[in-house]
Image (cartoon, rainbow, N blue to C red; front, side):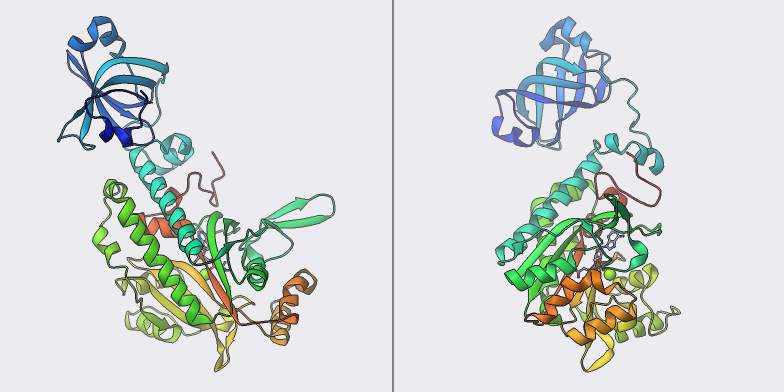
Amino acid sequence: MHVYIEDIGAHEGEEVTLKGWLHARRSSGRIHFLIVRDGSGFIQAVMSKAAVGDEMFKTADHLSQETSLRVTGTVRADTRAPSGFEIDVKAIEVVGESHDYPITPKEHGVDYLLDRRHLWIRTERQQAILRVRHEIINAVRDFFNARGFILADTPIFTPAACEGTTTLFPAQYFDEQTAYLTQSGQLYNEANAMALGRVYCFGPTFRAEKSKTRRHLTEFWMVEPEMAYADLDDVMQLAEGLLVSIVGRALDKRRRELTVLERDVSKLERVQAPFPRISYDDAVKILQEKGLPFEWGGDFGGPDETALSEHFDRPVMVHRYPTSVKPFYMKPDPQRPEVALGVDVLAPEGYGEIIGGGQRLDDLDLLLKRINEHGLPKEAFDWYIDLRRYGTVPHGGFGMGIERAVAWICGLEHVRETIPYPRMLNRLYP
Ligand code: 4AD
Ligand code: MG
């Protein structure tokens, strides 16, 4: 009977068949130790000459890394095995040979590995990361679904910018028009929230950013909730709840993977509400006290975010940035129009911004003024302006980049390992 390695514990003493690939092999004269993987886990299969006979034993003599094979044998509990079980092999059947597999247990450079990303994902570490990613995505969906948010998808081909015109990817849209790959579903989300109350979109987003940092991809996945009748405090509370929930889920369901990644989980266990909420003004003071040459009025760069996020042991919410550094759609604070009712959530341990959002500009005249000031084409935004013409309400939401959240939760150096096929300034292959 075929079983997956992750379910092997339910079959102790039974004869089972695994369908997988040879991850590694060690042999002594009379025994082959085969590490087999099938996508759900890794297990050692012990093949002795005595049990399988000379001929079958010989077929395993030259089995090489990543040969695909079916392995039939008996499940035996073994306290020394990482999974708690081993297989005593009765028979193996090679499905597809593999010669000179390019990724060996020795160290390879990261460009070499990225060029072979389609194979690199077979390693235990990369599998662990992709499993944590899967869990986080599920946790995000569960979080919003359990709170009455409706998933409403937003378009990928769009006629105009959302997050600034300098990072748009154009695409020829039939003969006449240029479309742009979406930078964010937010503007459509706002319309959807006026229809459905609480909504979220969750899809790929694109930024033609020429930055080569450990936090930037040109294609990344973003989840964006949006709420009608909400203010900045509601937005911060929602962001806090989401982060507590997804970190809790990773700790609960993906311990094994976090162990493979050698993640210090005590740091994740500290991610509990309430998170500190500090104003941009206070954040500037912290940076200046740390000796960074930062002046009020600028946007934080990567090193500033790193310094701020290292200052706290849990995510920190920085609110009320200067209106001038934020996009046209942010609502200026009525008490103090030089700052906007926006928030960035910075992850601890130097991971920087993982969430950005805030309260939206809901006043028609002010919105028209801001669109003008930002030099945006009013015609392209006419539908968006309608939301202020027909029953405008205070509203807000945020966007969380999945890859940044995964990099933080897994404790990775760079976002490039958090998505199966990363797209970056110099990478479009494989
Ligand atoms: O701060 P950003 O640009 O905000 C928006 O796009 C808003 N319209 C979202 C909203 O309010 N609905 O992006 C939000 C998040 C960032 O905090 C970050 O996690 C991620 O998206 N992000 C990136 N992740 C990877 N690579 C990039 N180049 C990213 N740019 C933003
Ligand atoms: Mg941002």
